[in-house]
Amino acid sequence: MRRAHSATPRPRGGSGRPEPEQLGFEGMPERLFVCTPSKLGAFEDCPRRYRFSYVDRPAPPKGPPWAHNSLGASVHTALRNWFGLPADRRHPEALPTLLKGTWVREGYRDEAQERTAYRRALEWLESYVETLDPAFEPLGVERVVAVKTSVLAFNGRADRIDSRTGPEGPELAIVDYKTGRTGLDSDDARGSQALALYAFAAERVFRRPCRRVELHHLPSGTVAAHEHTPESLARQVSRAEDTARDIVAAERAVAAGGDPDAAFPTAPGPICTWCDFRKSCPAGVEAPAKEPWAAVDRVLAPSGGEAAVVTASEQ
Ligand code: SF4
Image 1: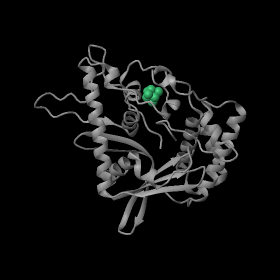
Image 2: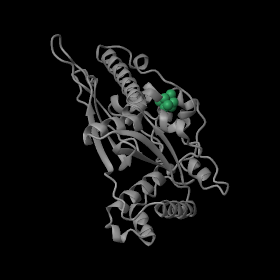
Image 3: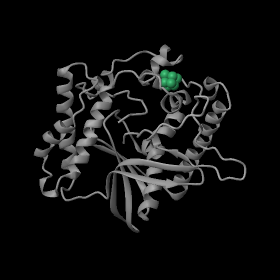
Image 4: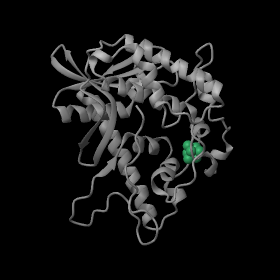
C-alpha cells in the first residue's frame, strides 16, 4: 500500500502561516482532522518531516526520486490493471504489457539496473498471479474508504479489499502489496496502523466484518496476516486520534506565533537516510547519504538480500 498524500494544501492565515485543521470557536463543534495513513504516519515517524510535507509552504525541496518507490509503484499499478482486465484475459502473457505500460523509470542507476529490476518485477508478478484464480474479483482494487470518528475524518486507498467467507459468514480482508524489505511477519501486519484503519473504515463502508489484514510480499511470495478484534481495531483508532490531537496542538502552537522548530521537533534515526527532506533538515544532514537506487540494489542482489527501505513511502 502506498501511503497517499493529503489531497490539498491547507489555506494560509494572514501571517503566511498555515491555519490549523481544527479551529473550533467556543461553543462551536470542532472540525474533524482530515487525514490519510501517510499523514498520520509522517507525524508519528518524525514531526519535522510532517511539517516539511504538510505545513511549510513552499515545502522544502525534496531529494531525487527513489528507485524503490518507482519499482513499488510500477508493480502496484500493474496489479491494479490486472484486475481491470476481463477475467478471460487474465493470463500471465498479459503481464509484460501491463508492466511496461505502468513502468516508472525514475531513480535507477542506469539502464542495466532498470532492465534487471523490470525482469525481477515481472517474475514476481508471474509467480503472484499463479496463486490467483483468474475469475477472482476483489470487492475493491485501490479502493478509497473513508470513515469519521469524533476526532478524525479518515480516508485512504487500500491496495485490495477481498470479500471472503469466514466461519461466521461473509467477511472482508484488507490486502497490502509489499515489494521492499524481506522478513515481514504477523507482527508487522498486527502493528500496521494503516491496515487497521483501512479495516475499520471498510467494515463501516461495506457493513461487513473486516478484521483480517494481510501483507502480500511479492519478492518472497509470502503472506503475513493478522486477525484483529473489535478491541484491537479500536486501540489503533484511538492511537490515530491521539496523533491527530498532537498534530493539531503543534499546528495551533505555530499559528499562535510559537517556534515551528519546537512545535515540530526532529526525530533523527535510521529513517533519516531515506528521508526526502534529509538535506533540508539539521538532523538529517548528519545521516549517511544513500544513492537513489541503493535499496533496489539490495532487492536485486543474487541472494535476494534484504532492502533497508524504511521511508514512509515504503512500497
Ligand atoms: S531527516 Fe530525519 S529528523 Fe529530519 S525530517 Fe527527515 S526523518 Fe525527520
